[in-house]
Image (cartoon, rainbow, N blue to C red; front, side):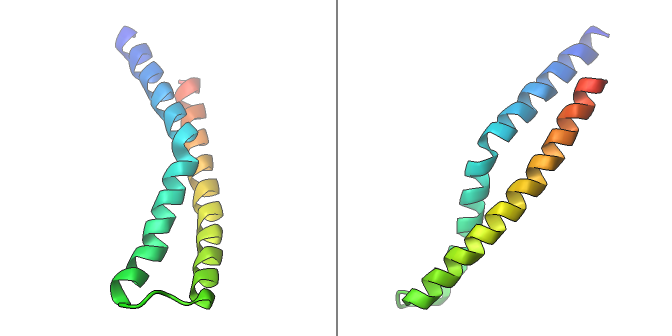
Length: 83
């Protein structure tokens, strides 16, 4: 029983840290996914239209990923607290 309580406590703390740093993680992940392939494939700097499109895509991906991951982590945290 003591090991289960310790494991649950560690899980709750880990999930709490994940929730705290989730926006930063999502922002970096989206920036890498959206910007890096474009920079690698092109030798020239992107024009303003490409920058605007990339920023819009970044924003949409950030909000979608953040909400999905946040809800998944919150449900995992709730189930860990219930057990």
